[in-house]
Image 1: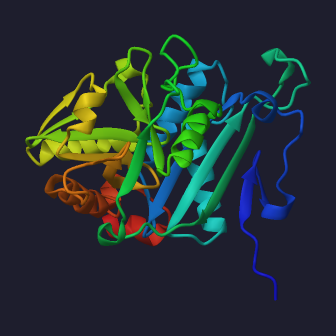
Image 2 (image 1 turned 60 degrees about the horizontal axis):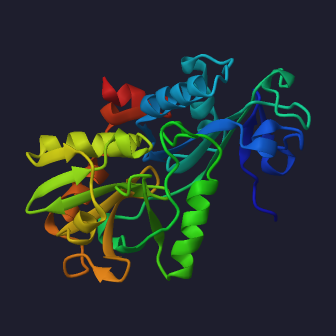
Length: 303
């Protein structure tokens, strides 16, 4: 018997995966004209869902894309997609494109945005099972903030893809991109944190970073735990001389870094602060107050 297909939300309709299709004239496909969010659910809680939805609308506003659903309707569309697929642990990809137009770039040719939501089973590994990653400082620079800024989470990831290709050629897992000034910006799909003598630094908005939802929650967590933290310019020298380096991202949570461009970080194993942040963050992901329950019984349990 063939495995049951997941349902995809597509413009208000739930379709089996094999039937969910968009036009070849969609400007998201033709020009990368759209925005998206990656979101996770853990044990029936969609972690930081409202924060992800808020960032989606901010990104859409920046590229002047009018999403025709309210924030509440979008939240419900995400939850209903999970319910249709009977998922409690999932990775969710929410995409809004400019919509179907023609071969010209004029956005007025797109009369209605395309919205689709994919939800697939995903169980985040326990912190003990997470393997440290290796990084490569790429020659590809992060796009500046006055260009196609990565502060908006758009569908155009070519900048990151080119850097990742370089990292793969160098035998690394991810790439580190510098900004146009030569300061550390971020990794190709994650934000960067540097630890030196128990003080934490992470690149600021000036370096053209994506304002990661996970990054923001980890910053709050670190301060709640009593660590000294600064959002500032970080040099490549500081990155390569750090006691600990870790990455943050929606799907990966907190990732320890073992090596950067051939140089060990510490002894190559997760440091004490990294281990603590990994453990504490994982606990956060299943707390109802940190997200949105998918199912009614979880809502009732909050009362």
